[in-house]
Length: 95
Image: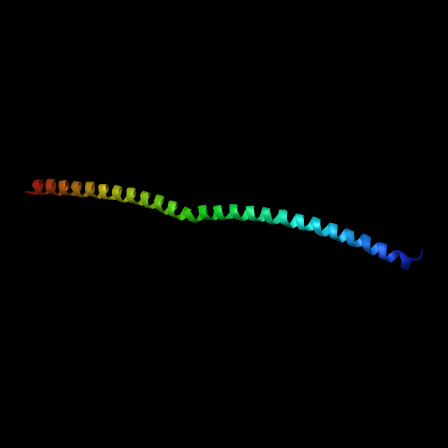
C-alpha cells in the first residue's frame, strides 16, 4: 500500500481525533463558563457589600460626631457656668 492510498484512512482518523477534541474543549469551556458565572455572582455580592460600607461607615462616624458634639456642648456649658460663678464672685469681692 502506498502512502497516497493510506491518506483517506489517516484523514478519517484525524477527523475523529478533531471531533473528540472539539467535544472535550466544548465541555471544558462550558465548565469554565459555569465557574466564571459563579465567580461573577460572588463578585457582585461582594461589590454590593462594599458599596454598602460607606453608609455604615458614614452612619458610625456621624454617631461619633454627635456624641463628641454633645460632649463639647456640655463642656461649654460647664465653662460658661464656671465663668459666671467666677465673675459673680470677683464682682462681690471688688465691691
